[in-house]
Each structure stands twice: as structure tokens, then as C-alpha cells.
Image 1 (cartoon, rainbow, N blue to C red):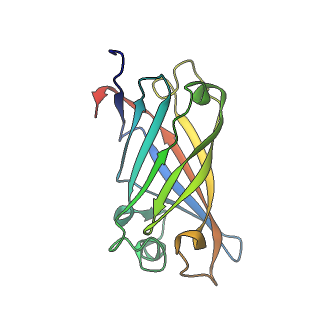
Image 2 (cartoon, rainbow, N blue to C red):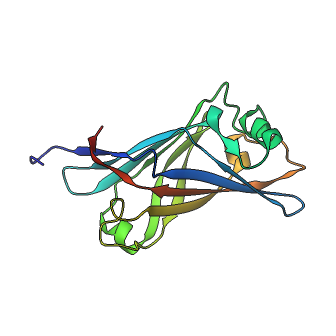
Length: 173
């Protein structure tokens, strides 16, 4: 890479997975996923890295339930008609983060609201995370901070996001 330039590496859409989990007030775990997603890892000129994730809320699926899928896409939750994309852009970080694990801060935009959030990156299980093994990150977000206030009597305010990312060989964005 020439000095002073950055490099964008796309996420592998077939090997990367983005999901969420929310609990009902009765303790039942509801799991969903974002089958339509995109993103890239940017290697900045100074060697730090930055990730950009885009999730299509209109494609969200709740495992085993058409009704919960409809609720998740609807006005009271992601409101995918008015807010078709949820997006996360990290702050630049040292590449050691994906090897050692730690905190990844960035701006999450969802339901028309942007806030700083922190996700936890798990320590790598291989020498080349993103290429030879998944980069795994999780984080808990409070729904009401983003106006996702529907179904309060049935669903917990806390949503746990989970991400497993692989990079696409030979592809740049």
C-alpha cells in the first residue's frame, strides 16, 4: 500500500453474520438476524483500522417466527419502511484489537438516531483474524435510546447484537 493511502477490504457476505437477541418479559430469548448486510474494514494510512457495517432492517428475520419478524420490521421496532438501514462506523483502532480482544467504540445509527456505543471484540482464535477465523464482537444497546419503544410490555429494553465477520479474499471496496 503506497504511503498516505487507505485500503478497503469488503466483508465476505456468505461467511459474515450479524444478529441480535432480545428477551421477552417472560424470559424467552428471541433471536434474529440480518441476512442482507454489507461492510468493510478500512486500513488507514497510519496503520490503524476502522470498520463500517450496514444492515438492511427490511430484511431482518426472527428465527422461527413470521410474527416476530413482522414486529421487528414494523414501526414499533426497526421501522424498516422509514429507516431501511442500521449502520455502525467504528472509531479508528490499533490492529492488535482483533488479536487481543477489547473495546471497540463507534457511532451506531439506527431508527434515525446516532449514538456512540461500545462493542466487545473477542480475542482471536487464529493468527489472521478475519481471514482464517471470524472476528467476533458483541454489544448491548438500549432500545429506548433509539426510539425503538414499541412492544414495551412484551420485550426487554436491552438488545444484544452479535457479529461474526470474515473478509473477502482479493476484494476491495
